Image 1 (cartoon, helix red, strand yellow):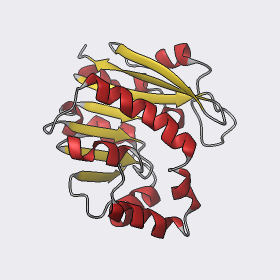
Image 2: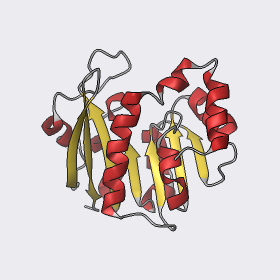
Image 3: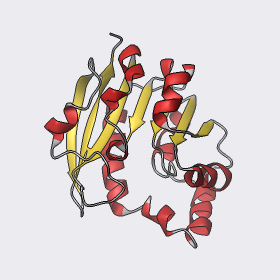
Length: 200
């Protein structure tokens, strides 16, 4: 649920930032709602839980969805613009979020927070290396919720998959899949995989 102050911030910022408005597009809502609903049905979060969001973009939909249900959220993106706008304009009154402008792979290899997170969300797997290449994910116990897609024609998509079976091959070694799903969008199919990560 988007509160009134956040809605006002979105309208104000969106007047000169079409990229932000795209983060609230029907396609974005459709695919992220799919992931959010699956996570909530698993009943794996509580007020002591911590979430890490890889490739958070503006955090537009995911942050409001989980903010009141968890202890803390780390929102990570390599793009400084997204982090600055999210931190200083959109979510400036949200005090349980750490906005981190860093490469997901660099941050995760050096930050102890990854070892205590209860849930890792990445709805941007098509924008980065396969999650199996992030070796730290083989050494933590956590839930994960990942999404990728088959939208190869979008220039910023460097790691699309043809289908959900191909997506499964990009998971860390000991990942156990609990939920798999897919959502058809205007441009292609968004694949969702949710499960558990285990220490090797």
